[in-house]
Amino acid sequence: MASETVKKSRYDDIINLPHHTSVVHPRMSDMNRAAQFSSFEALNGFGDEIDETGRFTDSKADIDENSKDILDEKLRIIISRLELHPEVSITYFIDDAKKSGGAYHTVNGCIKKIDSYNKTIVFTDGLSISIDSIKDINFNDIF
Image (tube, rainbow, N blue to C red):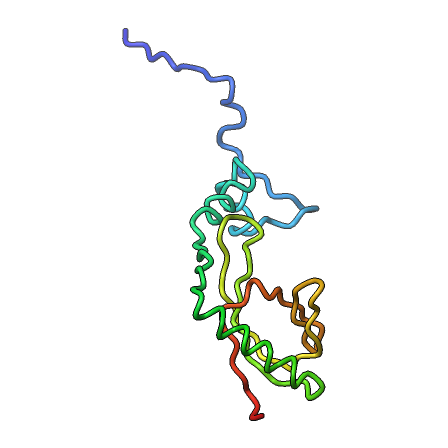
């Protein structure tokens, strides 16, 4: 006599029931369901640190004596014409706030004053540049 043994599972009573659909809550979109299983950043900010480490900065170039003399002469010209608020382009070095080095920037504008106490050039728009950080000065207007 061949007897079949049917193995009973504790879920036999619910295994073939239809999938429950809520009448109260709307069905979640596939996009939102997928977001539940997306990767997450286990170490917050670590990606930003890696990006910061890979960011390049320039080093400040040393200015030779000849270039210093030329800059001094250009500053004397500016001082002699200060009441005319001469328009200039100044290339200067800005230190990076997060790592060693920095970057050269060029700004155009009219000079309001030269602050000899703080060793800065002040533009009419309020921008102040350290004289020690200046690499080059070009005159935009004709004297």
